[in-house]
Length: 196
Image 1 (cartoon, rainbow, N blue to C red):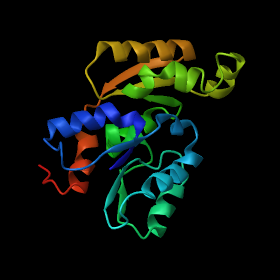
Image 2 (cartoon, one colour; image 1 turned 60 degrees about the horizontal axis):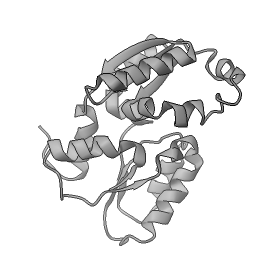
Image 3 (tube, one colour; image 1 turned 45 degrees about the vertical axis):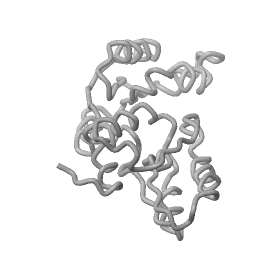
Image 4 (cartoon, rainbow, N blue to C red; image 1 turned 135 degrees about the vertical axis):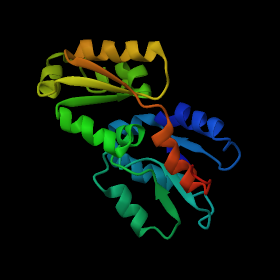
């Protein structure tokens, strides 16, 4: 399994909860690839160049902003490669149906996961340059209305990180506890573990 570094805690938790430890080797690519999705496929290719080509690979990635490039690479690969379902981590944490409902409720929604809430300053505030150019905040987020924190862990500190992010962006805050159920299912399937 080759996964996004933003999923380390969640994957460890799933592997422990589901008694999957030892069923797969897991490696992680740097989480900041989130800010440069055009680099995800090349990073995957580079890492897999040293892996036995006959070994099945499960990617702990959704499309993640690659605009279909990840799926095109998978479809064109001679390897046995699959990935997490969905367009992004928000969808696989909330589940496709619940994410669609949230999206329909308010198109102007900025989503956070536990990881993004914890690392909001580095990945969003500084990553988008708001620390140097505060005027960019309104340019980027002028059409947004709310922040939705999709929490995998029941941790008041993460909720406060999400609230703080919403305040800094000048947006309403919604907290939705997703847990890891929707996230765990495709992992069990990929590893051939009976679901249910």
